[in-house]
Every structure is written in structure tokens, then in C-alpha cells.
Image (cartoon, rainbow, N blue to C red):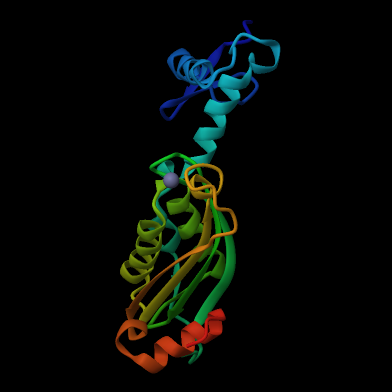
Length: 208
Ligand SMILES: [Zn+2]
């Protein structure tokens, strides 16, 4: 049996070792980029690089095959009289900027004030990753996470704050490392009521 034998599963093809098959034109594109960057894609250390890069990108962009709303489809109505803020703090994430395809590395804080429903806390992180594992800009990522929770969980308020470093700024361009960008999206009571907003921001660790 040939090493490149493939099995097709839901659009992507897989090799017999279980790894995703890399189409030739995708590997060629990476080879072209290596050559253009100034190296020789045929030298020994770079021989397998195109297929590794291609597979890595499938992983970085796994969010395209992940429906964020799906993670909020199982909600609990039993909130036991709990009517305070639920906050998931310091969730580490990785994304890639859509302008340079360079890493965005940061942490997110996601809070909501439950209406009639709560959700398993890990689901908030899953929503974040489903949007983060795509080509993104931080502002849109922040808004998409908040909107998704707002629409699907129907809470009284949603607050999403994201702090991240952008490799396109630290490793190229102005080459300024150590700069953090902060974005936030407040909805419902966190937008309309100053005291609620101050409360959630101080829980996250921001001075109100
Ligand atoms: Zn960028």
C-alpha cells in the first residue's frame, strides 16, 4: 500500500497515518514562499516543511469548521436563584491577524449576567476559540464572542475584554515588543448601567 494512500472524510482527505493530506498546490505555495523569502525549499531541513506548515495552518484555522453557537446550544434553566455575574477570567488564546497572518497571543475575560439560562463555564472558552482559530482582527473577535453569547444565551448583560500582543507589531513593522492591545464589548446592563459596568470591570481587574 502506498504511503500517500488517502481516505476522504467530510471534505478533507486523510493519509493512512491519520494526518490530514496536503494537496500538492498547497505545498507548492509554501515552497514558493520559502524561495521568495530567500531560502532553498529543496535543502534537507526544509524538505518536509511545506506539509508541516500546511497542517499547522489547518490547526490554527480549525475555527472555520467549528460553529461557535453550537457550544451554547445546551443551556441550564436551573440557576438556583443565582443572579450575580458569572466571569471566566484570563482565558489564554491564540489567533492570527488577517492582515499579516501573524500570531495574536493574549487572554480574554468573558462575563455575563444570567437571565433565565446559564451554560457550562468551559463553553465560554469554546466560543472564544471557535472565533479565535480563524484569521481575525482583535476588535472583530471581541465583538463576535460577545454577540454570540448575547444572541444564544439571552443574558441580561455580556462583557468581553481581550488583551493581546500582535506579532505583526512586535516582530515586524515598528518592531515594538511588549505592547498590549485591549478591546472590550459591553452589552445589555454592562453597557447601559454604569454601576454594573464598574462591577464587572473591577471583577476582571480593571479599575473602574
Ligand atoms: Zn497584522
